[in-house]
Length: 232
Image (cartoon, rainbow, N blue to C red; front, side, top):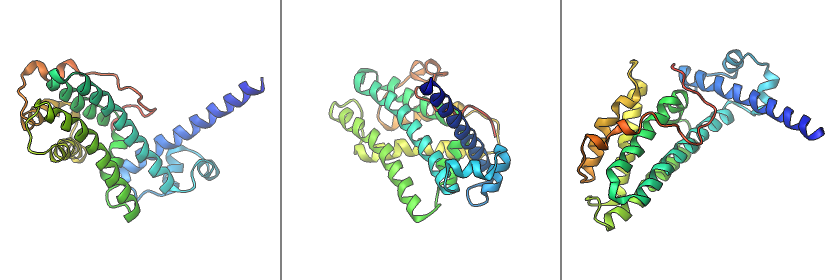
């Protein structure tokens, strides 16, 4: 019985922390990091000061927790696509399609966190900037590894796998950032087809309509965290 009580209490704590994080993500997305005060988060979450500091030492720690969560979610989604590339080199166009489609879908369903990862975190501090750059490099390395293998098998045609990986990841980031900064109701996934076609051509891969996003959207994102789709 003691174990059940303890488990219930832990579940309540987890739910409270989740509520604070969800509320903070919305405030950070609306006001930006510097303009957001702990008081703003308290008001949005409708909690006491004591409740906030029970879970987080300061807003910096909360912000970093949100950022890390988005990075880990994205890496998990990318790994699914990368595994497809490794196991299915003969259908690389479909694999690239899956990587791009899942990337855009992930950021669309987690718009508040996407703003934190790609906009609010830029130039936050020298220390955090190093972390942000390292995380982006980690994501590029995921693609570089698979591109090197595909280049050796002559599946893709690029001068350099590292540069191709940087440009591939960068094209996804650029489209997502553009979408976040636009005052429009357009779904991010509507950019999928042109973005996929662009990257396939850049990699020297022939594609047709059957290779594009229709067969991959919607897709249930594996290992998705508790943040749900909600427009800002």
